[in-house]
Image 1 (cartoon, rainbow, N blue to C red):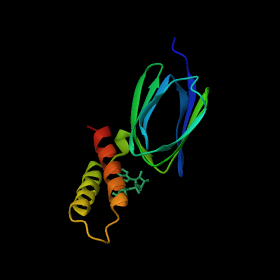
Image 2 (cartoon, rainbow, N blue to C red):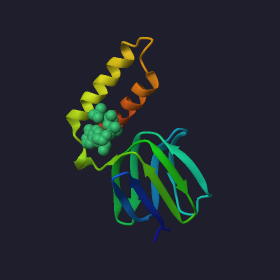
Image 3 (spheres, protein in one colour):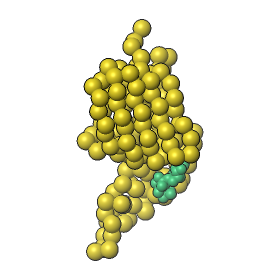
Image 4 (cartoon, rainbow, N blue to C red):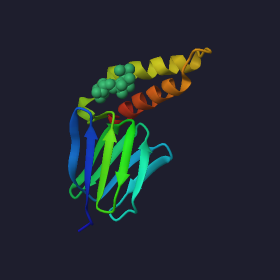
Length: 132
Ligand code: ATP
């Protein structure tokens, strides 16, 4: 039996996930990471991407956006601005958000906030990828 740790994913409006997992993967500002039980204590900053939760009996995927992660040997706590299970994602809305962000990046002017457009694009891509 694989070793387990606690995972809690907290969003402003709900506890998105709480359970015992053998691994969790997510995207950080430093790149994608996979965390197993007994990891050394660490905090990290989330970047939009796919959250993959490995439970004893299978995998769960979700879109996970900006926030912070606290990693302890026995527990990982994620505090995120937003997270969505695949069935909660509105594909049309995500595609419209992607197109809008791409358009802003392509037709940039002095007034364009590129970092904001790029993060919006990352969020939209994460949502699209999690249901494809
Ligand atoms: P949009 O431009 O379409 O609002 P966004 O990336 O700016 O997208 P966020 O600020 O990340 O949206 O999210 C605002 C709220 O709307 C959050 O609760 C988020 O879960 C929800 N949300 C955003 N896009 C979608 C989507 N495509 N499907 C389902 N829920 C979404």
